[in-house]
Amino acid sequence: MTYIIYIYESIITYLSTFNSSTFSAIAAIFAAIAAIVMCFLTFHMKKSDIVVYIEPDADAKDILCLCVSNTGQSTARNITFEFNQPVPLKAFDKIIDNKKTVNLDVSFLSKGFFIEGLTHLAAGKTRKIHLGHFQTLHHHLAENPLSCNVTYKNKIPFPIRVSNETDHFEFSIHDWAHDPQGDNSHLKHLKQINESLQSISESLEILQVKL
View (cartoon, helix red, strand yellow):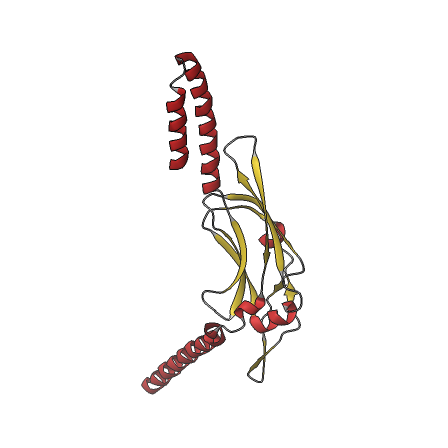
């Protein structure tokens, strides 16, 4: 931006050698051009930027989420998603003989914002859905990785113009194959449940003694 202002001032200094009427006309033209350029630069710096990605859930690291975020500086509108295949949903592992096994019977995404789209997503905001556990998701997505085309609109600072943005994202399920936090997070939940049950049991024993 400073470089553009410097060029503009240099041009104005050069044009000052012309007569006043010619200088005024040319200066007005350059001022209009500079204003338009600065307007577009401001738009590009503050436009929205939609990204789609997979990450572990913040509270249960062994569960993977499909997320959409606006990492730009303005609201994105009319956001639509197109996936290359049905998206697994509630793909949680089965527990058989205290061991996790692949769940072959999973649901697939059929409604919600990833199917119907979003009317808008404000800057810095994220929406997500839970896909399931790595082992089951890997079974369904290993041979044919999930990918997504996302389209959305940026409002240009002119009432008759709208910018259509399109981006493509591919998701590698292997990125989350060895997440030590994810592998042990379910044990923390079981420990908390066990401690709660033990506390209840002790309280009942005390109550029984008093009775």
